[in-house]
Amino acid sequence: MKKKILTDREQEVFNLLVLNKTTEEIANLLDISEKTVRNHISNAIQKLGVKGRAQAVVELIKLGEIVI
Image (tube, helix red, strand yellow):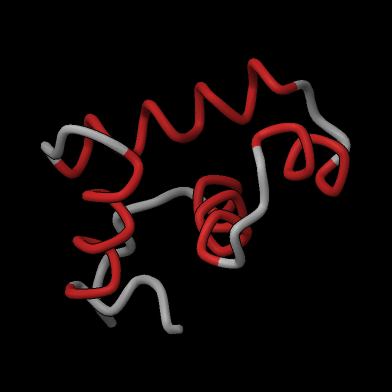
């Protein structure tokens, strides 16, 4: 089994980002603060070594972590 790059929560956040949800919408859906959503996104961006949300999404799709 291949090791996942993202935590379960980071995965949830990016799955919602792909659905074009805003930071506020993601926070409400997951019952967490907007700051926590931004932290999850930032952590994932660092892990992937990319420069932003859009690049992170592209990389995660390439890696098979996100299916659209």
